[in-house]
Length: 557
Ligand code: AMP
Image 1 (tube, helix red, strand yellow):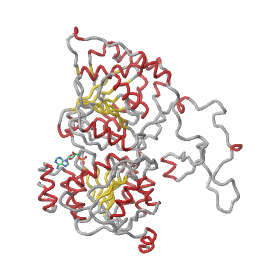
Image 2: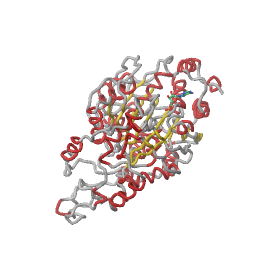
Image 3: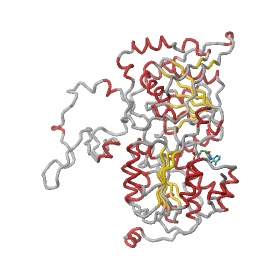
Image 4: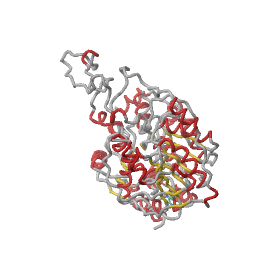
């Protein structure tokens, strides 16, 4: 089948041809005609399958007729991360180059006033992360009554990040009669429930992730002590001549530490995590994409959606806390049928997380032999013995901060059993590098991480995603509050200190709770940040139609 058979307009086809695509991918083949018919779609597809084009191309044609009004977008696309939202915007620019559509990108960390100005001019395509969209809605800067097409992208990621209550709120603000396109990389009961809630008689389209992506990725595991990881990484980078790699850490602060360490050792690196101001995130990513930096040290915020070609290596500096993230991380390399390498550094303390990844892969990750590692590489026997020696804490592994996901097993991902990899140079070339003592000292003398919020800040939202979903309120001490009827005299929404009982009797939290990593990068939509950056709109060509928002609200109600 060719693109011409899908029912797209000549202008869109011209843009597709100029993109260099000759054949539609399976999701494009199935979804484009259905979207053009105006039907809802439930798409189960990962990034890398061409799903973004599967919804952007037909949307461009549908929106080609009609005109947007100030502050009333005609279509809305919700994405979980800013980078993914920006990538969707790039797709609209690429395929919509022959259509005069106005687009605005509403993401946290960018200047609000620029986004407000874009909305005032009227937008055909609004791409947003949920938090920033709701912020602007609550400020009265946007009305959603005119949305004809809504896309929810990466629904499973939204669920993991606790955005579903926000998405439900957004959907409740849209007209009942609309077209909804819902995409998720995985399907489980919760996702199915959401799909039932948001979609009407959808066409279900499921495509297996491109088998070639996984099949072309050579995987390898290095067992190494935690304190030797940075040194081991440097040796692997040099031995394997790595020039274009994602290096994943589980925690944001480790991203910063590793980035500084690599820079100090002369590597060309940039860093990316969810706590960085958006302007810096954009800069870092742009540098990496332009090959101005060879290594991107990042958290899982970069594990999904980012589509950068020619990434030769993914290195897991930490075994991911959630096994599925392993699949998403290694999917950054070996794209479009190219060869890729995915190496994982695992310490004895990562035993449980590693077991979960290997269970998901249906087999062990083959050992990677790099002679330059010398004594840093632990044999399986030593690693097992050290796991025992570290005691129950190591065997248990670090407890995930988020509840375990209930996603379906990733059994459709082709995992090729790799032979043991040996990149050893001849023995005489092996020169063990001195261990950098100052790094160890710096790690020891680091002051404890500053908390962003005071524990006693009454306004702090201490609810987790599940609480938010259940609408359970918690006081600043993390204790769930009762729902009190309006006619009952009580202490308002706050529990006085004298009523609080310390659940640990003054002895502090037990080890397994105290060990939970605090800054796992699982929240990206930092919509309440106030960081200014460059304007996020593109292709704006309509003059403002004006109109006070209250007036518009009154007119539309
Ligand atoms: P996505 O799944 O949307 O993240 O797309 C993954 C990559 O596939 C992107 O780099 C797209 O530019 C590319 N792509 C999308 N459609 C096609 C196509 N029909 N032929 C070749 N590449 C495509």
